[in-house]
Image (cartoon, rainbow, N blue to C red; front, side, top):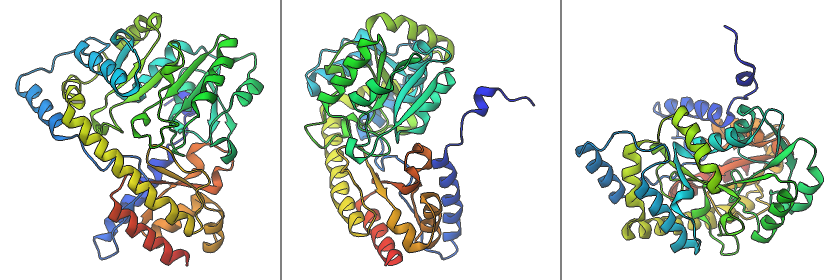
Length: 394
């Protein structure tokens, strides 16, 4: 069968390849091997809080499962608008908010609406692999620019200005970022956007971890800068609704009907049950629970990062958000006699029964020297993982 060229350009998602190997090894654990500790997948161990689950049950019992508008339930768009006002002091009209089938659909819609064949989108290296594939699926080219510890693994305005060429259409950033958990300083993001505006380009910012910010300096939405910034967000991370597949876009008013038209044709509407459930995310009790969980994620970070540093798995920039540790594994590779993070991830999986993610998914600029840990697991799991790593690396 002839496979389309666009499909052949998409690389495997190595995170999932490693996850399959870890799961296979975990099945052997039932035969008496120490159980696998999974620190490879970026998924909160918390599920949707009680009010959200109850809202979903009520919607099912009441038969509220018909299609909604492609842009989503008006009531939910209003709730999100109110959340921006309450939490960030921003006036984001509900008319600019489009609900989507997860942040993945939001990114796909934005790319299809704005990227022409041959357009180039600037992104940091390292960055989340699926983001560059959305650009590729729209027949654009993701140009990854090396961004090291000195840049907090984020692009700077100077880099964007220097890299801008005839085919450049804009930038796709993430703040906080996967895999590094680092954010862009608001002043630097403003400077980046000024460079983009000079070239009549587009600024897309993946903000799916915005609710999980731990540093007041960085915990601000890019929407505070300009109404023409496009923000991608999700109910998966802060709101603990990963499998519900619900996200949203904040768009300039003139782009909403374009994205609506695309959504109508690509998937009709987001999950209706998930939308009715998400209304309860913004109840006071739910928001209080989310803040309790945010504090727990911060406590996990505050334990785990110093422990990694002590083990020689140096984290060069302290994550200010999300639930990841981007660790330099050069010393660990030497200790275990492996050549790079790919081999190290399998060594840790097989010898310590700790599953981590090698850097190769996230780019090519020194990523072979880094592994990503997810700190979304409970503290006892993180503590046990540290002990296993200490035993092995000693």
